[in-house]
Amino acid sequence: MTSADKFGIAFAIGITAVMIGLISGGTFETSQPSPIQSAPTQTYSPPPQAAVEESAPAQAPIMTPSDDDLTDVLSYNIRGAVVDSIVGDSDNNSVNVLIDARLDGNLTITISSSVVEPFADGTYFVLVDGEEIHDFTQTGSILSIPFLAGATEVTILGITDDYVAAQAADKAAADKAAAEHEAMMAEKAAAEKAAAEKAAAEKAAALPMSISIENAIGSSTPGCEPDCFIPNAATVAVGGTVSFVNSDTAPHTSTSGTPADGPDGVWDSSLVMPGSSYDTTISSAGTYDYFCMVHPWMTGTITAK
Ligand SMILES: [Cu+2]
Image (cartoon, rainbow, N blue to C red; front, top):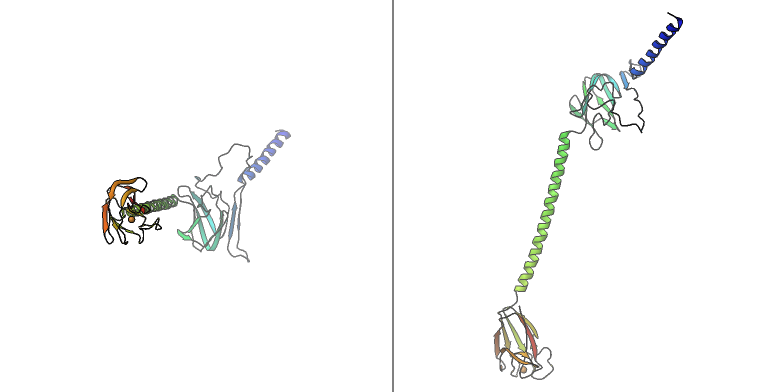
């Protein structure tokens, strides 16, 4: 073997050693109890991943939620216990950290949303040995979770299908309630409109079936116009009766028509003596002019509806 070959082999061994060092990457430390801090601590950080250039096509992530063993994937720091394993459960959108807690302690772990998708507000649920706990803290994606000596399992749980279904059911119920409220309001408005229309119709239908019209006192001389018949303009229901009452001291007539064109033949009382009256029935809708044949300044109208 030449010296050149020996050099080549030595070089290859050196390169291989460097490569192994790079591949194994991550750091793993376990410190012994110290006088200051009695609980053991364990820290793990995964090796940095190769930077992806922005212009490069999207690459499949090295770690995916379907990976079950996340022991060498997630960064954590634990005090008072050692981590046996970290197992992802993509079906349940959760991560289980199996620990051996010799003392009361704390687990700080970074959970990315690609490993466990959080709830809509970015938070996670945390269970210790199956019991939900609330005294953990979450800062961004870093969870700091306390546990008691003897704990064996820390579970970090994200949004679940049941939760999504419950949210969807809540929204559907709210939408239904809103739709029902809207329909009820529309129904109420329609009912109010119908009631108003009915009231208007009843009011219109409530025209009197009989009215009384008097001759103004002293109407036998001009000057009573336009109120020589009181009221001068009156309304009665179709088929109703109009009673002309002569409460004046002179005889008068109520004659349909106008002084200019004369009687039109609908009705004519002829002379009505003081203290007497004359009734006529209006059988058709319309507006009727009338006057007094004796005193042509006396005029009035009757409307029948
Ligand atoms: Cu008259």
